[in-house]
Amino acid sequence: MITSTGPLRDNVMAAEWTMQISYDPLLIAVFIHPDAATFKNIKKTKEFGVNVAADEQTPLVNISGGYSRIEIDKLKVRNSFNILKPRYIKAPLISGCIINAECKLVTMKKLGDHTMVVGKVVAIKYDKTKNPLVYHIGKYHRIGSVIESFRQVVKINKMTFEWFFAQADGRFVLKCVGALIKSGKRVFISNYATKNYSYMTIPYMIPKRGSDHAKVLQMYLKQSGLRVKLKHTPIIKRLVVKNKSKIQRINFILFEGKLRSESVIQSKWKSVRTDALLQAITS
Ligand SMILES: Cc1cc2nc3c(=O)[nH]c(=O)nc-3n(C[C@H](O)[C@H](O)[C@H](O)COP(=O)(O)O)c2cc1C
Image 1 (cartoon, helix red, strand yellow):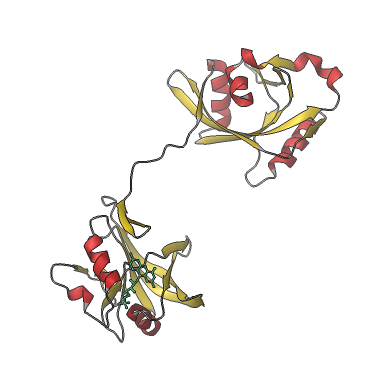
Image 2 (cartoon, rainbow, N blue to C red):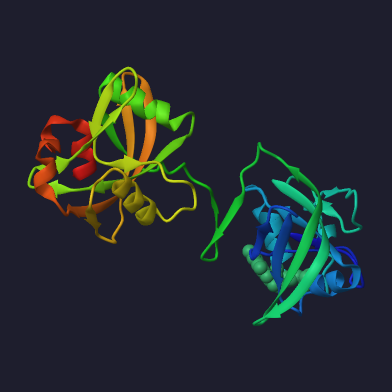
């Protein structure tokens, strides 16, 4: 609900086309029809309030979206709006919302039949105890349950777990890129060793954020003495590796590849059936 004041005096309108468009500075864009009283107010006073409706506020949204300030003084409708005092703007704010933001106009741009009205947030209040009202295909809804992002759970031995856990170094998701070089039921593996133990799995590395994954993998393989022709299609495996009660999320971006000189490295093929992680990666 967009609040404003100006030539048409204190007002509120419903605007589903409202969104945050920048973190720093914090900017909010609202797409408003130029015929709306709200538009005329904002054009004059160069400020507005953004009041994100809570899911028990449908009657208020109905009023603010169903009538124009030209028709009735919506904010004065009996048993409806409770007004909050703003700090930095003159437009009123609405009590009971999930967010109240005070905005100063930054720019306006006519795009199609609506005008994009961008405001810089100069004060904001957020009520964590409330849930937002959802408007979808002309009907009001409450938000439902959280959608769990699916990950394949892989039980692995302690040593392997500790290896990846240490590599994750506290990161919520460890992102790896690896080469999937298959030959029947076998897959090509490399040896990774630390002081304490060694571990064999597909040739993989942890790419820097923002790097071209296929390119850095190719370089890594070359440095490891492997001549591999990689396919261009990335495969994604989103896993949770587990050992007892400990877990670590791992995303593998895999590129299938062919070894260019197989005969030299015969000894480094492993049957996928013998290793839970390899099974998960190759399935
Ligand atoms: C749920 C809902 C969402 C709306 N979203 C928008 C919107 O994003 N932009 C817009 O210009 N009008 C939108 N409207 C219509 C305005 O709220 C409506 O035209 C209102 O009467 C304008 O009020 P005013 O003339 O007092 O400013 C919406 C209406 C409803 C019911």
